[in-house]
Figure 1 (cartoon, rainbow, N blue to C red):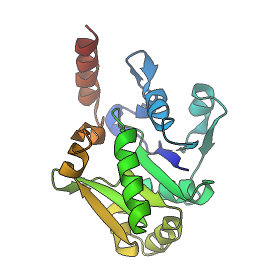
Figure 2: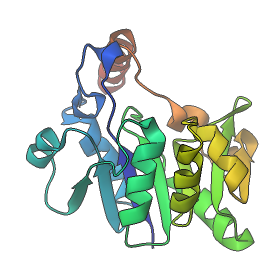
Figure 3: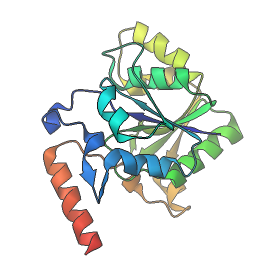
Figure 4: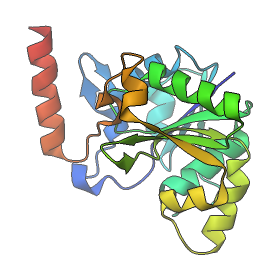
Length: 203
């Protein structure tokens, strides 16, 4: 069993304050697109946000909406809340600005985690670790609290507290999974380019 955790906090300054999870994309909101993909392999989906009201209107009651226990700590604060409150022992954690989530990639990482007993499995795409399309065990919540107590909020520092493994690009490619699942929308220009690409794909 797997929990999907969508981190939808932050101030979204680079989008003029507009929450990227609620952007329309291809006839649906980005968060709906993410929920649909997560629903392929997750029996529980959690959204962690500092502004619950828009999500209460946007998603149905099957999606749990929670807020941080430890506020102002960035993605790690959201991960801590989601991992602490989930019912399953393993989570697929993503950022709310990722339009091309891959249930296939998550499934491959979870299987790797289970087979070798890791606390976390993190993609390494183009030489870079992608902490927010990764698989984590519930026990990582305690490690996050320890890290935050040091004053460090960098997600990659969490790995010093965990037994973890990375998965390289070619390990996904053998399953027919390309690297686009790590793509993000950071700015208005990113969003406009994505809209154009979707329109062209639908034409």
